[in-house]
Image 1 (cartoon, one colour):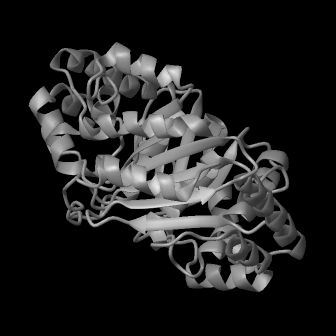
Image 2 (tube, one colour):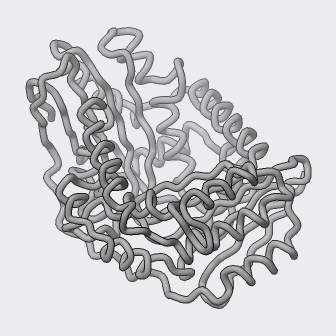
Image 3 (cartoon, helix red, strand yellow):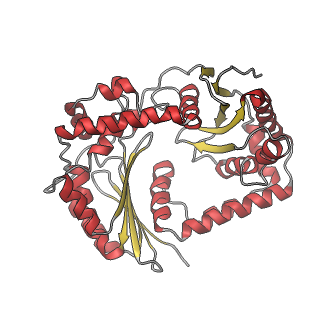
Length: 410
């Protein structure tokens, strides 16, 4: 079935994307606003996260309770989240209710109440989120890895810091909203059983007079220290490492994705087979390709009993460095099947399509069609992945460990 994809960029900089999916009865909107945690003031880390919690506590003519009831009455399954560069808003419901949902979200984005009497409870929630990291060592080590792989502020964590959360006041929340909630650089993506012309007219009416340019480019800090150990009495040592890779728009994008899936793509993957199954060093071990707009990382992690932690780290580094030395054809076949399955599932989900289109537009300035993605997956080969690994070999590792004893590495 031929994809029906539409695109329009309004004079104020807001881009509207839509895909008509006639075979579904639902519709999903996904809006990215360039107000992510990378823009948090250094002395108020966590501000964007608190704003995302406050922003649905009253907007337009509705107070907090009325807003919640209006969304519930539409059966609108909604979410608000904070990423590095964007704050994202999602909402899905039956197709005929989506226009009313868009009306409400226009109020949330443009006319939130941000009531001062709600700030303290939102701060408390944020502080609880930070405290929960102490009970999730696997998550904490990944947060620390970002801090030791990326320079500030692209190493920011959306949770922020205790000091940053406690330093917030209502004026700083409102200033942040006014500064970063603007149409320039914002992307609204809609997928499902929709009609393009009525959607275009409604978005023009709701957002056409919204004003404001995209934020200026970030100023990056110095490169961080690459190797660090965090002392903590645990039964298992947490290990996380990363090495530089490529950004989303790079021509090797699918080769890098293929390499990550050879390492960690199910029970037949190398890390699972060599580290978990053959040596029994850890229950879980993982690798992933994590690209940004101007850079990327290949990331791996594991958790091991303390007496096996050194061997786990050694073996993890060994498997990463061994990958450029050779790949089997059956590994490529398994990766193709895995990626095609993911592609098929994305084709059938309005939520995944809306998210993918917005992400594509931010990173590429266009929407990748299924035919392009399928051709790229079919084109993966031993040679293409090895060529990529030779151009961008596993080296210059950043390594973070969390546990009772530091580990050595070379």
